[in-house]
Image (cartoon, rainbow, N blue to C red; front, top):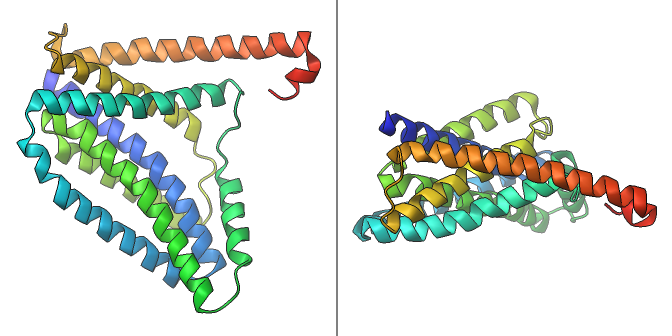
Length: 256
């Protein structure tokens, strides 16, 4: 049961986190393909994927020589910083303090930028570079997530499968609809991912310090429940705070 819990949570965290990152990369690649040309989009994407695979092949084996306690501690800290960043932004977006991420807006901005480029070899190079940069930047985060959620318990294969599944789902949906995936509840996904990654972080930091968690790996589910409850309360409190500001200070409330 404990192993099933760990595997399923690893798959879910890797799939959802990778899904969000791949959607953002897909938006830019789609803008490049529709605005400039698909050849530049595919070349930039292909080069980025080759480089990402090379990074995994180079640095992946190095993790095998790191003592498990040290690995859990380092990954736990890094994953905590990563997860809390997602959680913080998702809470602020859900409460209205910062705008929701808009894939249509990102698509239009990238398309407008590419249209302003002159035709010719320079335009093709910039289009290829845009696709490469988008896939590379989002891909590095996917690689980190896969390694972080999978390596401390030797579940990198399961985490990789979750990322590949996310890639396949995004590509299938994107190629079918041929437009930015703006209807996906991205902020809700980021909120879930932030909770999951932070839960993994707390669990592994504790293991690195020698904490004997009640229920062993099932303790991850306990962290998920506690953090999800905290996020819900934080969103509710921030929404209430915004309403109070709007009622007492209408001028300042217009900026929130």
